[in-house]
Image 1 (cartoon, rainbow, N blue to C red):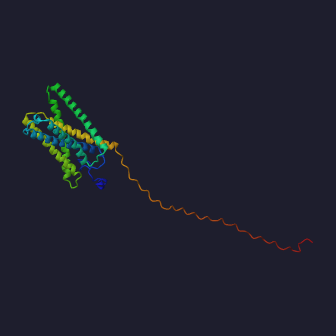
Image 2 (tube, helix red, strand yellow; image 1 turned 180 degrees about the horizontal axis):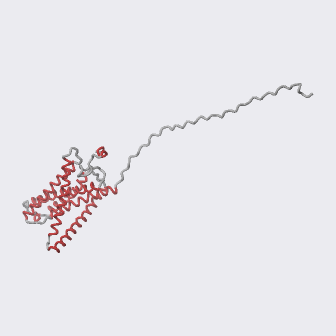
Image 3 (tube, rainbow, N blue to C red; image 1 turned 90 degrees about the horizontal axis):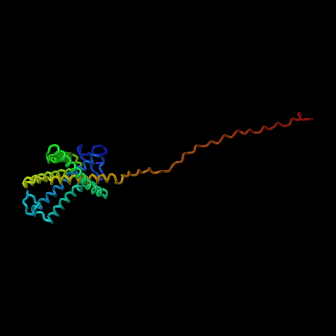
Length: 291
């Protein structure tokens, strides 16, 4: 995979070929948003599966026929078990997402995930305030009491459906390719999508048979998905901001060999000046000597 990444063949994000994952934090903004989207899908799916199991358990243990509202059969032990199953479903979503992205659990990631779950509550509150505001405006203009709320709910559901469809298409394309980049994540996406569809179908069936048209079960699943998305997004943010920076491998200095001293240029001795032998004076000529 490393050689493929260096040659530019490895997938970078869903929509191109797939998503490369590593133990480090994701690099591009699109990859981080994809991580949050998978957190939403996987958490919503896990919550739906465990909430559905809780519904079946309460119905069977309380003697309530399936399809009817089991709220009247809730006792203290069953209520605790139901609450525990839904909490497990919510907590399992971000954990599974983190593992499928091949990420390590560090104290930074855990604290970031906890803070992100709390921040997700603020996001849910902001969405609720937006829906309430739109509902008030629509009621003031048209007189419809629930028209604004229903319209906002339809828009939110359509946005979630488009998001899930994008992830599922990428999963199917990656599984059908000759070189698979993230098979575990693909399977997780498909399984949790089936869980979301099953939960939605079961909720619709109960609403139809019981005559209760309150879609709060679907709203709770969407809320769980938002909390899962903010949890993994904050965990990734904590790893990127507060994680240790990657240290480049030290470059080995070439082994120092013996340093050859530069050969000294031969110093030529100055040429000695020729020494002339003294000329012997001629012997005294007796004829020239003074008499």
